[in-house]
Amino acid sequence: MMDKEFKEERENHVGRMIHMLSHQLKRRGAVPEMETGLTPMQKHILTFILFETMERDLYQRDIEEEFRIRRSTASGILKLMEKNGFIYRKSVARDARLKQIVPTEKAEKFRMDILMNIKETERRLTEGIPKPDLEVCLKVLRHMLLNLSGEGQIK
Image (cartoon, rainbow, N blue to C red; front, side, top):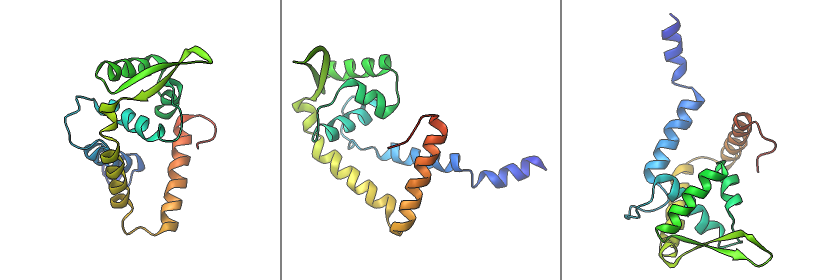
């Protein structure tokens, strides 16, 4: 009896739906299907770097905060990305310990394709959904993220 109820409820479990949607998004990926040699996480970080550096200087702590990863994890990922020629880190005049993350020419070649891919993915995700429904969806998703993160306000 309990198993049947659980199975019926499972069809509408929020976590399950988010997992399925996440899987579809990962399959599409922001980095087009070019052979980059990057792991999925490195692709997400490269996308973030390429997008954010259009507007501002970027540092390791920004990546730690955005992806909610530990310093050691971010450091390891960035070292590999640097080794593979996608980024370089340069010292900042005001603090030699602080390293600005800069995409290389190799990474820059992907920028427009990535941005177009993101735009197309967003279009497909939101197709046929009224704007008020999307606003509610985003509000609820932010609240769920806050519930699970145990942190303060979500941006």
